[in-house]
Structure formats: structure tokens, C-alpha cells
Length: 138
Image (tube, rainbow, N blue to C red; front, top):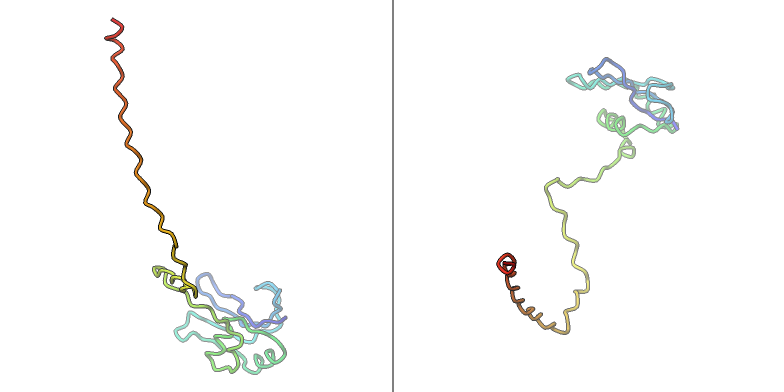
């Protein structure tokens, strides 16, 4: 399966990307079919240039853009990229408690018999202090 994806190039801490057509199982820096554009996120305008005719050709022939490439293509005016963009569920803020489960349809049955209150246990008498063994030995 062919993918339209980004291939990182550029120096350390100055990333630039090629937009390439490559086999899905191929390594990211491996072989590719064709270079169809460039992306430089460091620029003030985030320059993203692609050959529109070649992108349309490859999509028509079954190439699937990655999520990031589809978002960039949509931003530049390509139609039909929504079907390639994944929708992520919204996360709840960390400090928020999870909601309590909804009340069940049938309420819990009330206890029919009242249980008698437990009777307190009788207080134990303290043990007598031990006899003085030294006084008894003399």
C-alpha cells in the first residue's frame, strides 16, 4: 500500500521534510517512489509546497496520505482530505473527577427486617497487680 508521508531531512534542530510517495512498509528514510513536495515548519509562514496534480494522481490511484499530510493538504485547499484525518476523542482535564454512574432503572430494595442494635460487650475487670515477689521471698 502506498502512503503519502513526510520524510525528515535537514540539520539537527532545523527540521525540513520531503513529501514523498512510499510503500507503507518501507523505512522512513528508505526508498520512495516520488518526491511530490516540501514542508519547512521553521518558516514564519510554514512553507508547504506540493505538486497538486501529482498528489491528485496518486490519491486517485490508491495512495493514502498520513494524518499529518492530510491535515496540511486540507489547510492548503485540497478537497476530500477529511476522510483521511483521524478524529481523536476529547480528553477530560486531569483534575476533574469521573462522573458517577447513572442511577439504575430499579432502585435497591429496602431492608425488610430491622436488625437489632448490637449489645455492648461487658467490660472486663482489670487483672490484679502482680504480687511483690521480692517481699514474699524474704
